[in-house]
Length: 93
Image 1 (tube, rainbow, N blue to C red):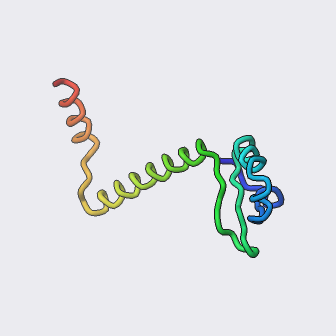
Image 2: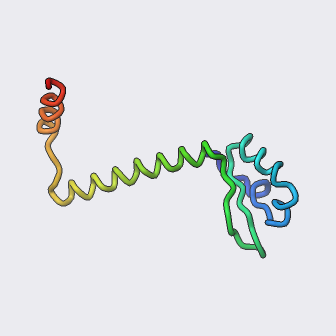
Image 3: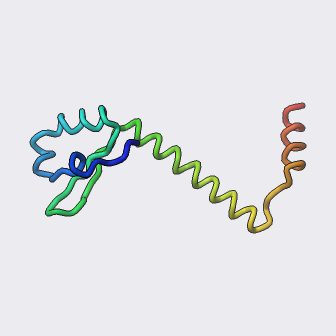
């Protein structure tokens, strides 16, 4: 996802209502989200579907890494040699 450009990517809801097709095109073309405001406060984000999917994949990976780190801290990890042997046993079957 591209970095947000504050002067271009933060829009009031009233402006979004009147030109939603243009904002969808902008999000698709720039790969940047549009922050939608109401009464001067951020209330929603308009995001390209592909960019959203990539963000979800990254979050899943980070969550898996965090889980792994916690397991290692709790002594539930395996050594490199044990992991290698386990994989080799599965491959040989």
